[in-house]
Image (cartoon, rainbow, N blue to C red):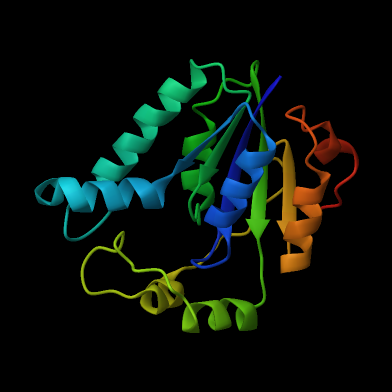
Amino acid sequence: MRTVLLTIGSTHAGKTTFARQLAQRLPASLVIDQDLQARFLLEHYPDLVPTEGPNQIKHDLTGWLIEKAITSSFETIILCNANTTRTGRKQLLNQFPLSTFRSILVWFDLPEAILSNRLTHSKRDGREIRGESSYYDIYQQQRIEPPVTGEADKIVRLRSPEDVEAFLDHVTDSSHDFLFDEVSTD
């Protein structure tokens, strides 16, 4: 059975770094990162990107990439973005047939002190941000709806950088059986 893994968390929680590290451990995997898509669109097609409201072109691009990934031979698809609302997560996961995919939500529930420190010391250039906002502004506006039982086949809650490392240390192959047997969740 194939796996779709969806990250949840605030800006600077480590979702992109995690997705890249996970993909390195899983040779038959693909990362779909909305920050990369936003950056690409703003750099190459700025006139198509809305200045206010949802970035529908980015969401449409994500949908197209998901469609292509589903029909590919990738065993694991890693969707990397904030995924702050249950409704948004459901819309993403509904694209993956239950007969073919099992789903895992990886919730980066890091303490505010860690996130604040990361924001303060960030070296990211912010090219994916629309308008005059900063990462700090985005962080202040983000409200994560915590995942609930039944939202996915498995929910993994990471509360510290050590939890992230422990999770990645358990990744040995693309079967993901370890997630359903060994990793504790809340």
